Image 1 (tube, rainbow, N blue to C red):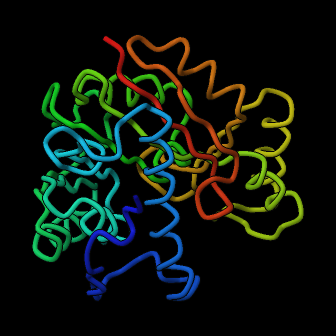
Image 2 (cartoon, one colour; image 1 turned 30 degrees about the horizontal axis):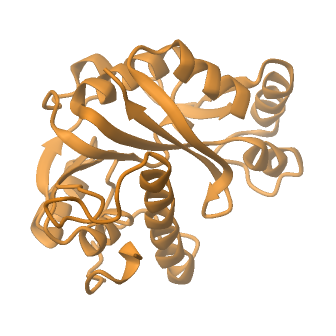
Length: 251
């Protein structure tokens, strides 16, 4: 079974699309890669390719947070055509665009993980693409707990992080990730020493930046959480760049 061929891809773009800066070929491939990560994660979680109700992997309810302007959500809609997909982000325009264009349920997010307005015991699948890449360590536990509560029992969480590939990019200045040379040096040094580092973007009124997290550091974070089990981890799994993790709610 391939989720990527379940239906027709809606290629409508928002006039405020923020993720096309690397070109449209890369834009489409990143979305396809996310869907492949999700399918691999669902298999690793032991979900049957066709649920007893006929839905792909038995998935009927999905959360995409942060959804942006639908780079991945459009592929989710293609792969899970009958699912109820919730689009959530801090950017209201993106949420409303995804709701109108991809028949998603709009849900405006919150910068405080403890205040995320997520329904409890609701989602079969949660996709979190490039959120943990931008928050400091204390917020990780809060986000993981919010997502755990939002999942149904045995529901699946798939999320991505910056790991070795991003660190190498920073060291050779292949990409700056929005930071100065001094900030990049601090990030890579902290990562090498501790397995985790965070650098805040300058000029913002709220705490938002770039994080680097090793496979071991993330694995320990999940182990220390309550009610989530790590079942799959792939370095550079998403778009040959970000590491990808799959967890199952166990409680």
